[in-house]
Length: 292
Image 1 (cartoon, one colour):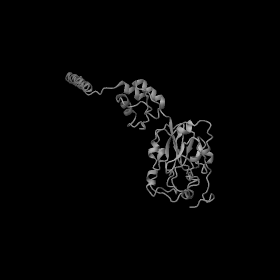
Image 2 (cartoon, one colour):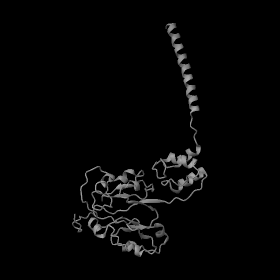
Image 3 (spheres, one colour):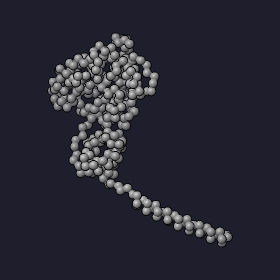
Image 4 (cartoon, one colour):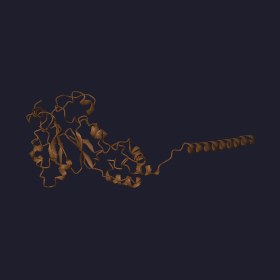
């Protein structure tokens, strides 16, 4: 082999070696100069969080909450709703903060206007979202307070706790629901409400219209007769001037002696015991006396 070629190759190798070392030291120096200090506590808290980034804590994701709860003295450890009490205790042990209780909550759909009960008054052919449909005269349903069934809530749920049922309205998988409340904000009809997981009764209607209007649009809508308000022995059911409201703490604390007269007295069956929401068979509106 030509000695000159060997010499050129060796010089080239030496040159690139030196350049590599120079650039390596330069990168190392830059890394040290611009290094972002890592807070070990933040990393430990972040590892405890469920990584859902649902925003239920009020921060822009799990990383933001981890930084806030470690570095902010006034940020409580119980803001991770999906993590419940277990995560709150873990964060408390890492940060040394006082652990306050976390109310275990789920969402309940306050509408029973299935395709068997609530009629349509128009055909909607626009963007298939509840938000868009609600802008067109309140949506295609005759009941302007009821569920539109286009699944905005299902799409925002990061835990798979919501699904569209065969009867036209969402169903809540109670075991999977964490109470993150993303569906509450997504529903344009304000039909989802956070309930304590240990609730006794549920209300599946937020009708705000007169009885004649309700009966013309939905077979099981609340007629605002207020019999439940008058008969509740715990005074847990009240009327706020527009619709029925349940104070679940009063309801639960009243004790097992309450035989839930509100459920039995309700003529529309929109008050029901936990896990006993009526699931109707499909009924033709004409057969039930409801006309379009």
